Length: 226
Image (tube, rainbow, N blue to C red):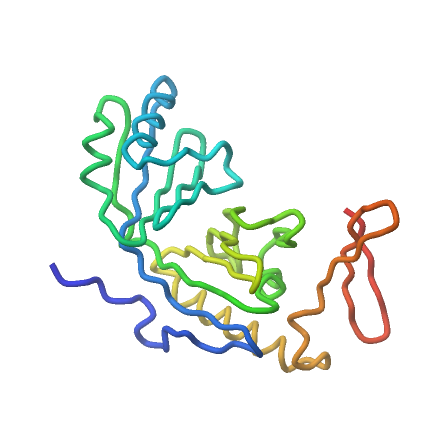
């Protein structure tokens, strides 16, 4: 069976430099599987999946469980999204989950994964995502399902230094999202704030230990305490 063609073939698929030190590239998926359990079978299904993959299941819909080459997201009640970097997952997971207990489907063909890495990555995504991506509240391992420019995305922080995010987008919207991302970076770097416009968000700790989110722009300081 031939390898699937990239949805981003009409454009450079990276790594593409968006700003100083900030790059984006497509990260192919070895496999992506969705698992849905029924209300009365959630625990046995999750236990079977964890035993088959030899990894713990995530406790909530905010933090992924990751091991070498494998990431498990709890994307909804009784639903898992499992991403593999190297091995196929469909057959062993179908063997592990009886059809009477849940549904297992391969969805890698329907998603594109982009990796955004470098200083200002969170600030760039924040131009479109209504989610607080500050590392204090969105640490390594955290993920969120949200919309950017009216497109569904799943944003997963994979590293702190440099800032690194994996962004999952539906295949039919991948090219549109790529265009938004590159245009947003271009606009940011062309503003009066110059090359540092994607790195204006910093955290400062107050005397009582709270975190101040400081938006540093020429001639003014805006502070928004959480």
